[in-house]
Image 1 (spheres, rainbow, N blue to C red):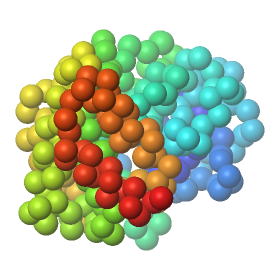
Image 2 (image 1 turned 30 degrees about the vertical axis):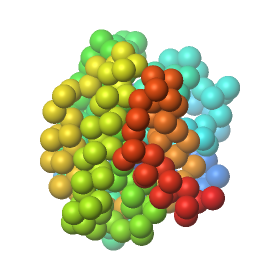
Image 3 (image 1 turned 180 degrees about the horizontal axis):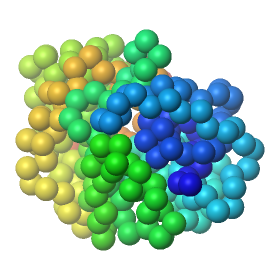
Amino acid sequence: MTCVVVGPGLVGSYLGAAAGSPQVMVGPRGTVRAHCVRLATGIQTWSPQIVEKAAAHLPTLITCRVHQTDWRSMPADALAAQNGLGQPRAVAVCFFAIDLDDGVLHTTGPRPRVVVGRLATRWQPTLTAWRNAGILVEEVDDVRSAQWEKVIFNATVGPLCLSTGLTMAGVWQDPALRQLTMDATAEGVRIAHANGIFCHDDLVDRASIFFAQLGDHHPSVVADAGELPWVIQPLLDAAQQQRLVIPAIDRIAAMVAAVTN
């Protein structure tokens, strides 16, 4: 037995199937988004039990979006696999893109990677199951570095897809938008460092490699702009606190505001 998944959308269905999660708690949609998942080990059919309350012996994996989460009902040792900063629970930082084609859920781009902090022992079956399914799972002493890295990624190409209507490939193939992405990524690293968060100095190169492999993927913020306050705004606030000038991130924020306000 591994974990119960709260909000089995695309990410929840992928991680839930990879873990063999026996139970899910559904959101307003009332269903599991995908029952057929392509893992590194092959096609996995996943049919968890839908419950209103998780079994006490199972840890809780939160995969609905931050702004859709009822944090008051989430146990203290829950793990949030979500985009953004500010979750009042431990986080699992997911570096992968997911698409649903012909009823089959699959990742796009590089090998899926999940980074977590040091978790309670009862999370080990879930982490082991993910590894066995081909996911690279990293356990670190301080997960904030990975969380900020993912937020910096999320604050660039995704909002540009939302503001322009392009896919990730479309953004990446536009020289001006690609340069804007790289400039914003470099600014994100400066913001992190100024706020005492370690980020690799080669993050711009790593972002370039990551985004170049994602093709015509539509990031989650395109489907739900409600993620933006948890993605772009924390960077804007952190930069303001340190009195940093961030023209590229400011421009992306303005482009998004023009189509969402």
